[in-house]
Length: 388
Ligand code: GLA
Image (cartoon, rainbow, N blue to C red; front, side, top):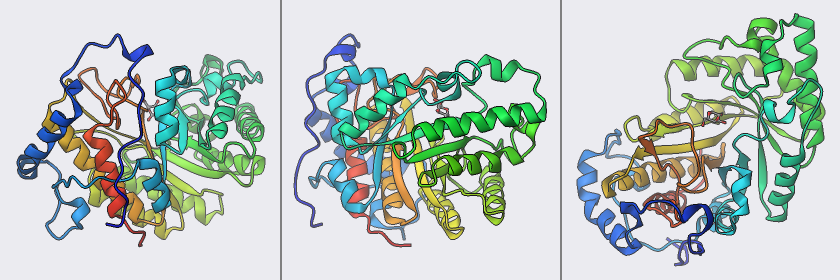
């Protein structure tokens, strides 16, 4: 590898919201943790649950090297991959956390602030104060913002869910919402999750939009978003679409149909919320990226986290690191895969996606120190070369 030796980004001492957290096993000095990870490598090789054939690329193999690598941000830039963090904007008031996020990632997704209940809390009354501040903050730090999300069945205002809509009435309200939000951020938010989670296990989800408007609400939302900002990348974001299966197949049919009708869909977002007990498959991921790419779509991993049992053992952290390495490698080696966003800046971030006994899905521990997962992503990026 030609990569220059270096260390992970400097992280300031824990302070603010971190300092009240109870000590956990992973707060042992980094050297001890690293030694445990290396010592457990052979054990993990025999027990890790995902199926990796021996013919795979070395970056997919369940072994670790201790080669020092450049910081993640530099490696990702070298590979042409955007790396992001899903964040809560208010946490950026903590200087240590803000430094960690801005020095590690090139993209931010506010986990909630762009959702309908916050951007249009009352009918026709839009509130962009928090999102405007965040967009300005991101740009001041050379970072991109993902707009997440315009249309979703959750985190909607009560007035939207509780009105007995006519078709024409809801269509007009949806159009106003999508166009007002996208137009407001025109040129400043370059990528939108236009529709989030439109599919259940194998069919179109029943929600206020599909029940009142029928399946065409999806095409409408994309067309209105495109009209409001023709240069924005428009994404259909979902869960359970990162491996072949019924959900993926339903989604594939949906986007293929949209493209056949010239609906301006640019890409598919793979949320990728997982746990060690239900891990992602690197080969499954590769297969779906290639399938979507063959339709001319890009793919972005938008909410990646692989939760570990709490508190995690060194073996759990090593398995998590291996999975992150595989995912980073697959994304960085596929030209269609534009970016990889982790759902949280560090493990102190609140994450409502997991049950209480599972968590710590980020690259940094609750005190902001890089975990083995950070090194796993470095290794995945370092090994990858872009090829179809
Ligand atoms: C979905 C949404 C995210 C977030 C998670 C739960 O993945 O897209 O915005 O709300 O659920 O943490």
